[in-house]
Amino acid sequence: MHRESSFCPRSFFGLLPSVPRNSTAPRAERLVTFRFLTVVMSGLFYFFSLGMLLPTVPLFVEGPLGGSDVAVGLLVGSFSIGAVLIRPFAGRIGDRMGRKILIVGGASVVALSVSLYLLVTGPEMLFAARLFGGIGEAAFFVGAGTMITDLAPTDRRGEAISYWSVAVYSGLAFGPALGEFILDGNHYKRVWVAAMVFAAVAAVIGLFTSETVVPAPSGTVAAPLINRSSLMPGSVLFLGMIGLAGFAAFTPLYVSDVGLQDSSSVFLLYGCTILGVRILAAKVPDKIGPLRSGTWATSAAAVGLLILAVVQTKFGLYLGTFVFATGISLLYPSVLTLALTGVPDSERGSAVGTISSFFDLSQAVGAAVLGVSVKVGGFRAGFTLAALAAIAALALLRSGIDPRTRGPIDHDAASLAREFLEPDPP
Image 1: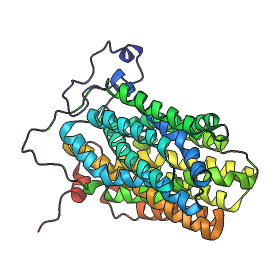
Image 2: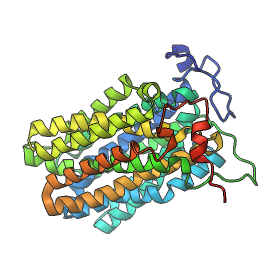
Image 3: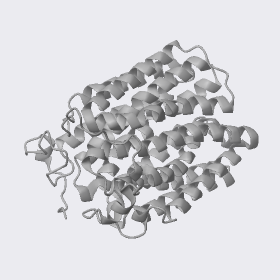
Image 4: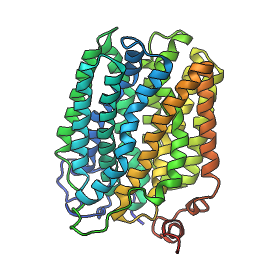
């Protein structure tokens, strides 16, 4: 069992030795080191770029492009379509060639894709640009997310994922407000340029990350494209995150129904709530286990979405957002911790890539399906359908289909996971 450790100022400046460059697993017990913070800083700028697009792309589709609610869902979700197509391959590349190439290359592709927004004159062009950007998103997220788990002690992975997600949700909290501030009515090109610059800065910072794996020699058996360990946790993530797809796509359009001028305050509340939970409850998935923290996450997400559906006022919007955010904040750390239990180091990128693919599917499918639901039954129908998906996620998590959810998880023993991870005999 690793000792609990706290942030040491000397480690920030790299004055103490850290994990050897070619190590496939962390040997030091510290969690927050200079290497760790470099990945987090790259992620912070990257997710600021994505956060700026959250409220502006739906407004751009509905406004200058003249799209319907269905078009908003399709074009917002197209980003995730590109990501889901490449995500499993990104995991394999990360296991064989290293994480750094994914971080630098992914952020660079996203910067290039956002630059293409400057040339968009119709829905088809925006669809293609966002599809291309999704490829970069798949690479960056798998590379950065896997490197974070590489740098974490085994029994503190949930905590590491929570701290890493501080970068994610800092960008998603303050990025939308910055995007709408720069938009200032109808200056979409200013937003695209700013988002492009943030993604480019993330790529530059990525150059200073230190590789955590040795490239696999030729002839080495490749990790599976679809990692079995991530199938059940990924399915829970898929159902639980459908609500996030609808929240991101339709909140900018819904706020006017309850008397708000824009959605920046809602996204700020959402992001700050997640930041608070991730920082204050970073150790929760490790301490109480991913099953119990995942149960809380899916339950709170469902309740929050039901509040959004039923209480269609400013108060209901803010309350529902707060409750929904507290649930979503713990969902990804919980299911990723579960998915990585019992997985060998050589397949960690594959596992992260597989479970991240389920997230992409949730955003692509969720945005499109909820777009149709909103078109037919209004925002209430969309939020209700998303709540039902979260309830289904809870039921699946508690079903016991995955043996790792039938009792406490011992991170130092793979016996419980082996039953699930080993292939069935012929």
